[in-house]
Image (tube, rainbow, N blue to C red; front, side):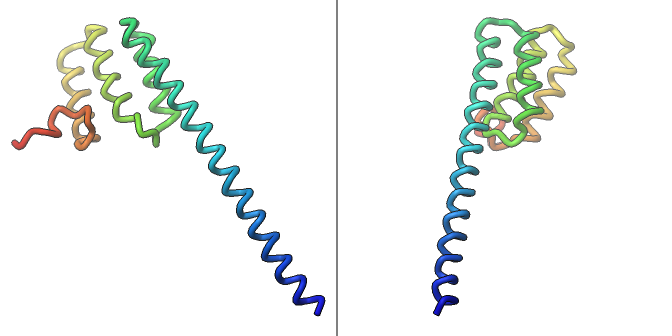
Length: 117
C-alpha cells in the first residue's frame, strides 16, 4: 500500500518540477525578448538621430547577440542603410542590400517581396 502512495507522489512531484522548469523557461525567454527589443530600439534611435556610426555599431552588435530575433532582418536592412549614409562605395552598399535580399527574401524589408520578376 505504501508503494501506491509513493507513485502518485512521484508523479505529482515530477509534474511540479516540470511546471517550474516551463515557467522558468518562459521567464528567461521573456527577458531575452525584452533585452533584444531594447537593443533594437536603442540602435534604431541612432537611425532617427542620424548617428550612422553608432547605429551601425549597435545593429552589428544586435545581429551578433540576437541572431534568432524576429527583428534580425530589419537590423540587417538598417546595417546596409547605415553603410549608404556613411558614404561607403555604392558597390559595397549594393552588395550589402543584395546579400540582405537573398538572405531574407520574405522580409517586409526586402524590396523584391512584392515584385513578380
